[in-house]
Image (cartoon, rainbow, N blue to C red):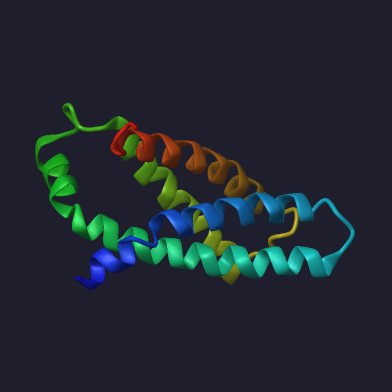
Length: 135
C-alpha cells in the first residue's frame, strides 16, 4: 500500500476529530475550567496537524487538477473545491498564527479562525458528499 494512500485514509478521521474538538474548544472557552479548555486545545492542535498532513498528501495526489485549473482557468471545475482550498488555507494560516504568535483567547485572529473553521466544516461536508457513492 502506498504511503500517500495510507496517510490520505486518515482524512475522514482527522477531519471529524478536528471539527469536533474545534467546536468543543470554542464551547470550553466560555466555561470556567482552564483544564477542560486545555484538553480540548491539545486534541484540536494534534488532530488539526494530522488533518493538515493528510490534506497535503491529498492535494499532492490531485496536483494535476490544480495544475489544469491554474493553466486553463476555473471553467467547469468545482467551485466548492476551490472555495474549500482557499478557506482551508485561511484556517491553517490563522491556526498557525494562534499557536506561534497570538494569545488565542478572545483574540480577533481566534474569532476569524473559528468562523472560517465553521465554514470549512460545511464546505468539507459538501466536498465529501459530492464524491461518495450514494447508498
